[in-house]
Image: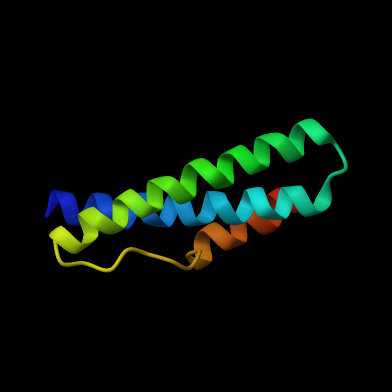
Amino acid sequence: AGDRLFVLHASAANTAEVELARRAMQKTQDPEIQRLSQMIIDDHQRANERLATVAQEVNIQPITQVPEQKRQVQEILLA
């Protein structure tokens, strides 16, 4: 159960952070924030690829959509 919970929590967090970084890139003109956002996107997408392998091994689907609670937090942060 621990591996399955890890996949769910990690994939939800990674997906939310990728989306937040994408949205931050769209809102800023600051090249440093854009660079950091791209680094976050790249790192978290690689992590999600590795998680997909673990998910297959433990027979569970990783989360690929930002959960509503995390989406609400994003809206507040980006307002």
